[in-house]
Length: 308
Image 1 (cartoon, one colour):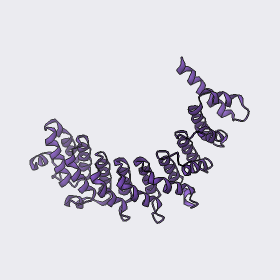
Image 2 (cartoon, helix red, strand yellow):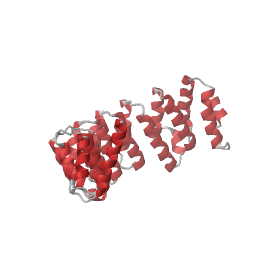
Image 3 (cartoon, one colour):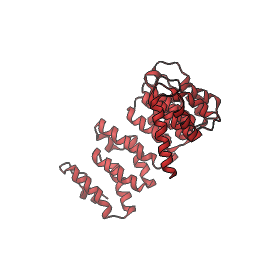
Image 4 (spheres, one colour):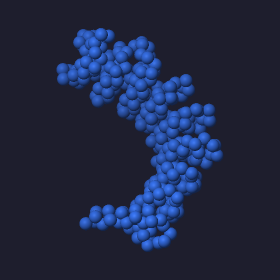
């Protein structure tokens, strides 16, 4: 193993790092899969060059052997001595890649390590974001309560982290998240108006949860009046995808929204729910904008082309 490392030039500080990277890539031409796994795992343990670690993480992710989880988790948690030699900014980027690679295994045994980083407020926000995303991708129910706590934490400074936590809750699909997410939409905190992305992520998450819940329906309906066009668009999509019997009735008012993109998305949603009739209605009625009439005609033209 050490001979392979030496041949690649990993320990030689005078070797061109691009050449080392190419040597690592070329290993797959000389070794069997089980040998490559051992080599990659070994390099993940001893290497302290971020460029080398980046390519090895990518190579190991292609093989995705369970034995690589250990070295990846150790690197994420900076447990191996080699990681202590990497500059802070470079180490952060490497650890983010580790979290992403770890999530691809969908192995619940790593949830504890991901939560450790996520819950550490002294941790760099990029690492915490990557861990939140990874938890959502893995989908383990054990992560639901900590993610809810994060979304509701008024002392959490990173709104972006709250967004990732909300998205993760939607991906996991546990109904325990419904009430906390609805409460965010109903909150009167001023920062939500400034950071509408959080509301967008919450609406997306609710769209993946329980749309038969009356609280959810009420919150989504209220979001159709939000000051942010994107929030309104997300609410339209969530309602469209729900099993609510009166979904089209709820969305219909948005055909007269002041924002053209909201109008367009409402029209598409109505078309998906009701079919051709709503397009004819828009074109024939004086209630709707010329812009919307053109969009309705475009959909008709496309509809007729598909029919032919």
